Image (cartoon, rainbow, N blue to C red; front, side, top):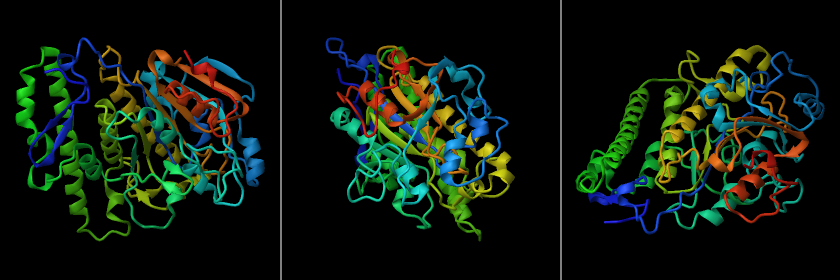
Length: 447
């Protein structure tokens, strides 16, 4: 039986398992074109500049009002330059073995619209980047975000037009939705993210009666055994590897849920979620995102590592002896600089993990999932302590033959980050001439 790369195995209880591309099941007369995907990995509260940006290792945090700080903190050369990405700064160092697949892009700005909280605009307007004071009925420049504009063009053939992932499991309700979401259908219309691995797992695999059974892989095992008879050796190996990766996701979910149940019986000052291994949680959600991209469940995803400004504490695996608030530390940067640098590197390690995972997955045409994904690390602040909106920390991975990689691209002073969003939209096939407050494409990354 010949089928497309989006075949599903179906089992009892309504369970389905999407398959990756398998050569044995492909239609030789009508080969499927490998799609280009787009995913955004968002880190809240900016970064410690001296650890992330080249040439700023010895800089001291400037003092003064927001306007003066924003002008003084752009330490990158105001002129345009393109150089090989060579020695990595401490925060970016986890990408050392992946340098040939990434670009460090510095000097990109966003316009802050005065009158609303700084953090509220960080995440909510990050992928919107609308021109300030142009959106009616909104206190900040929030419009339809890049992911949904791209999905309008590439999302018609996938089960999910977009998928929104979040790693904030807290329910303290101390902040509004504008501090905790980067994906919006339009002004005032949130695209709600899924922040619990089990809920995302159920959404992807449609296991309506999962509570009666052990896991999805058990539900579809008989169908899988029958299918394996039709596969060549290479595809059998790939199938087994994929099946095991789903098993690993299920096992990790079970482990974290059991740990949470045990922790809930202990009297803590912080919520139970604060004590769960942070890296395990982020990587588990990341594994689910990669699986969705790999199997064609979606071509567009957003991934938010944590919320803006919230004082919710996290354990940050192995970094600290007790849960810590990222936002709280960012406002005491002079005393907690070493701890903040550890958090920044921790987040980069999670991004690097997902980049490596994408690079390890082979596609139909011999390329990798990373070759066919525009995967961007970024934040809505250039510095978490001073709340600057200029010189944002941006790293773009993947893109394969479509994108020049292994570069440090420093944009001219005042370049809007919307220029990069316009470039990504056009790489995804959209016939756009402009996006938000863009002025032109970032031609340096186009192969």
